Amino acid sequence: MQSFTYNPPKVKNSTKMVSVTDSKGEIVCSFKRTYHNMFTRIADIFLSHNFFVQFDVFTESREIKYQGNKMPRWGRSHYKIVNLDNQEEYLVSCSSWQTLSPEFLIKCTSGDEFTVKKELMDWAKFYYDCKEAARWKMKTTELFKTYLEIEEHSPIKEPEFFICLFQCIFYIGD
Image 1 (cartoon, rainbow, N blue to C red):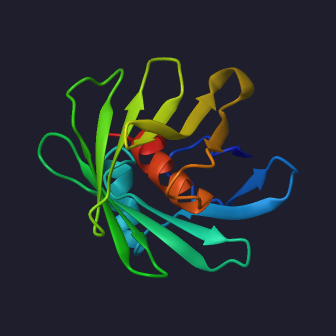
Image 2 (image 1 turned 90 degrees about the horizontal axis):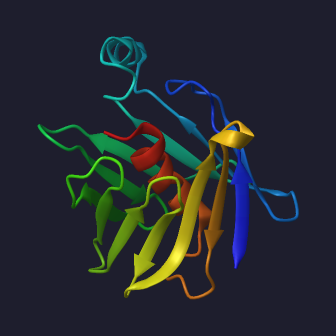
């Protein structure tokens, strides 16, 4: 199992670069929230800091690997995560109406489907073939320190993907 930790910004609309470290304390990737332009950023301030969402996740050599975007809709928002290396897209939609313990369906352009389930005050768990493949948790008791664990049998082994996914759906939400 691979383990990673990071401390996300305390303010949702922060564009600060955040480093993600592995269990040895080495930086494996980094991410930040970005805006297309100053007008988008100003509009986002008036729309509660979560309407225009884009996260860029970088490799350890500072190249963009994944990009996550919120696609606002009436009702629940959808998210699109793109692997910029091979242009593979992951479409994320909420499959339950519960806000305290939501469930998300992730459809990949390759045909794979994944599920994310979040229990109240517990880990958000990423499932593939009904088996837990990864988990994510933000601990408020540790000033929002965030933990990510990826199992050996996970079809996606890149922490960049999971950082992008979980930052979009649980840090920003809606």
